[in-house]
Image 1 (cartoon, rainbow, N blue to C red):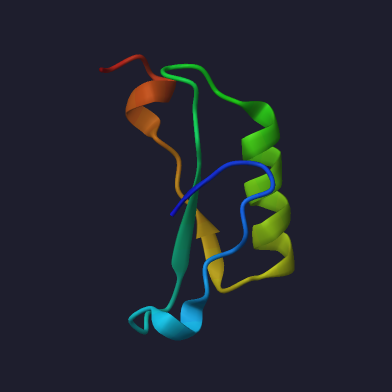
Image 2 (cartoon, rainbow, N blue to C red):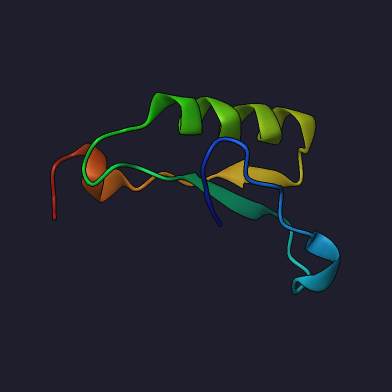
Length: 63
């Protein structure tokens, strides 16, 4: 799930069952928005059934 700082955590009760759900911090084009990354990391620390998904292609400069 793409997430920006302040977005509510999705309700897992309405999602298909899985071992882990993933949060992906929203970038500004190819630029990392650190507050979105920090927000996702905090949510994951507080909700361990969530994991972090990063847009690696953007981090390494692939469009």
